[in-house]
Image (cartoon, rainbow, N blue to C red; front, side, top):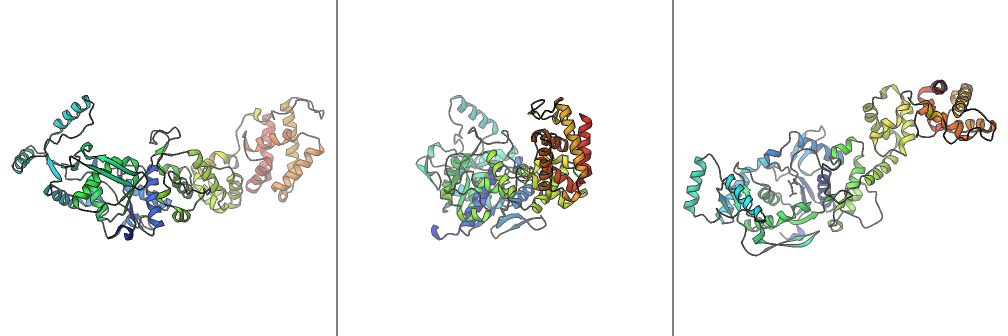
Length: 515
Ligand code: GLU
């Protein structure tokens, strides 16, 4: 089939080795966007041939994260409506450990063609070889000791090996001369001298293929048109291209993507900060915000637009606009995008999303009215960077605040100010708070909106020729116990909605007592 008419088929092929690194999500997303942009098919294949690294539950976890983020495979594994793991598609199985016979069959084919060979070398011999090479400052490579054994020698070695209870491995016979060129869609042409490529293992002694063999066989049989993966895999690609040639198959196109870097340009890894996608979701980064952020890790639409829905990304995404230089992972940018998405949320929806975080912070949300929770959410909507901050920022709406008396004193007050007020700063705060408590006593419950309170309290300040801060600071602290919070009118009107004016008066009196 002609390349230009070939249907676009991409795959994400993770190994289920634990948490979902944010870099994996970037790989998945780019493969997904490219397929969708081209009306193609996006496949999820699980590469579980490295048995020692498997982690129980990793596939479920991965599928959950992908579903939450809206990256849903057309073929391979996915979670259904009831979050059950399902597999679909004609070209499966999509789990490598269920394809062992296929790999074994293909390895035999390569051996027959002289493009692979049995290797009987013991671990000990290979270890010594590696040590020698390292001592000579040579790159560690297999010395091809078993490459040219005759059929009879192979037979003998095989018997010997088996009698020792071992199995041989099978290695790729890399051509000794010539060059292999990758025509990478992002990095351009990259050429490798075959003489520098290792005769790597294709089939391990446990009968499992290595990544190199399995990836080529699977990408071929799953009719992958474009391999999208990170640049770490570039050095493996010439070996893959040689395998395609050995099988007589047309290789897919390759598009390697830049690595994710920390702002200091070091490689982003688990050690440096938190990179598990599930943790980002737990902290209250919204799925759409996370997708929007991840899309920009190595891709740029070449316009000013920074906020994209998944549909807009699908429309705009092209591999041509993926760049080569490392993509900086800047958490501040994620916070910024997330804040923007939060600000655009409808308040009812925001409350629904905040409830689990309030619960985590020990708030029994059932005890409060929808209206109260909405009013609190509205106060914080402009400031929240992630949902998990809500507990710390709003605890005073659910429990009386604890704070030091000194916080009630307005620091900017010039003692015995021009209005002729005397006394210490603390005494001044005490007077103002007592007067405020009196003022609230006289207010009608229906006149406690933010606007009303602002008007009433400002009139009160004017009438007495007080300084704004000398009244508003202690009022706000008495209600919140915090150095920084939303303003006193907003806080008081919200408290009035949920807990009534008696609670406001109570807090003012507690403050008076503290002083
Ligand atoms: N299983 C490999 C990984 O874990 C896949 C690499 C590829 O896409 O070829 O990243």
